[in-house]
Amino acid sequence: MSRLIFKLRHVPDDEAEDVRQLLHDHDIDFYETSAGNWGISMPGIWLRNDDDYGLASSLLAEYQSQRQRESRAQYEADKAAGRAETQLDRLRQEPVKVILYFCLCAALIYVLVTAFYRL
Image (cartoon, rainbow, N blue to C red):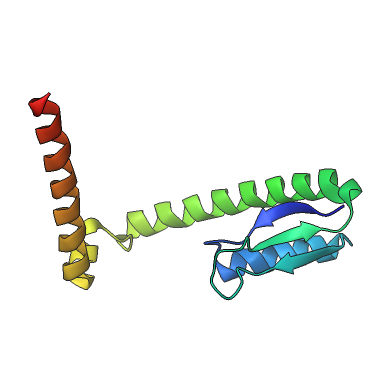
């Protein structure tokens, strides 16, 4: 029976390709499902053989740990060099979106606070 090993929703293309290559390099038989025409199905990488799950999950855990360390190191290097994106940079790049999100958060807080005081 097939078993889901890796969900592909909101996963960068390079990470998905790395996972595919990792499974291929270790001769683990897998297949992929897409989100479908409406985007509501589960996109993922599935193992064809349940017996491969232990090996595949340990390989993925090791890969994700390594990827997390590399990403953290890259972020720290960017932060030290002044290249890390800040909230002010986002405001400059997409002012309408940032202001809209701020207004939505303020409206939500207003509704919650006024509902609390009315009790």
